[in-house]
Length: 387
Image (cartoon, rainbow, N blue to C red):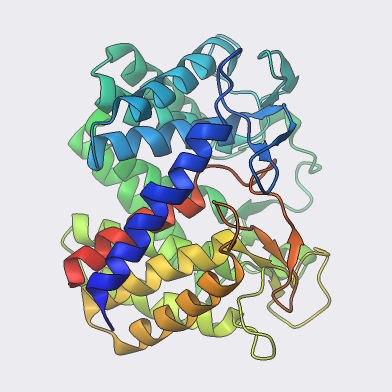
C-alpha cells in the first residue's frame, strides 16, 4: 500500500475540496454562525441553525488553524461562529439550546446534551487559537454543566416515565472519552485522569459485552442487558468510532493493552456490521436478529464508514495488525467510490443498502462540517506517520 500517495489523497481532499466548500457556502455573513442545510452544490435550503453543528464547525476550523496552518480565513471563520454561539446559543447560564432560527432566536429548548459537549469542544479549541480566557471559561462552565447532567442527560425534557425502564445510552460516555482529551489544557491533571478512567470503564466494561463480543447502545442503569427495542439496539459505527477514542486514551495513558483491546473490539464490530450482500456497514442492528424500530437501519451512512477508516488505520499504526490494514483498504475503496461526489465538493451522507445515493444534500440537520473533514484529517495524520 502506498501510504505516501494515500496521505496526499486525504490531505488534498481536505484542504482543496471539503474545507473550502464549508468556508464558501456555510458562513452566514449577515447574521453570523453557519448554514448547515446545503444542497449538493452548496446552495442553502434551510436557514435554521443547530447548536451541535454550529459547535462542531467552530471546533473543526479552529482545530485545523491550531494544528495544520495559521490561516487567517480559518480563524476568522471559527471566531465568527464562536461569537454567534456565545451570544445566542445558550440561555445565559450555559444551558445550550438545540436549535435557533437564522437570526439566533431559540427554536428548541436545551434538551440535548450533545449541544453542550460540542460547545465545550468548540470553545476549548477557540481558546487555544485565540488565547482568549473568556472562551476557556465558557468551555469550563459548560463542562461543569455536563458533569451535573450525567445521570439524566435530558433532564426535565426526558420523555421516559421515571422508574419503569431506566436505561443509559452509550453515546455520552463515548463522546466524553474524546472530550476529555479535547479540553485537557483546561482540566487539572487529577480530575482529567479520573474523567478518563470513568469513561474507559463505561465503554469497555459496561457497554462492551464480552459474552456477546459486541458493544450495545443501551444497558440498564445497573449495567445489565435489556431485552427491549432499545436494549437490543447495536450501532456498529458508534462502537467503532469509540474505539479510536479509546486507542487515543491508551496512547495518552501509556497503556498498550488498552490499545490492543480497543483494536480487537473495532475489528469485531466491523465484521459484525458489514453487509456481506451489498458491502458497507449497517446503520443499526438488533443483537438478537429481531426486526428493528429504526426504519433507516439498513442505510449506509457517511460518518459510520469514515470513523471506521480512522479506527482501522490507527489499529494498524499502533498494533501492526494486518487485519486492520485489510479492513481499511476495503472500507477506503467503498467510501471513495460511493460517498465522494465526482462532480461537486464535499461528500454524500446517505446511501441506501445497495450503495445508491438517497439524499443529494451535503449538509442538513445532522450532517455538518465535522465527520468528513475530521476523518480526512485523522487519516492524513496517521498516513503521514506510516510513510
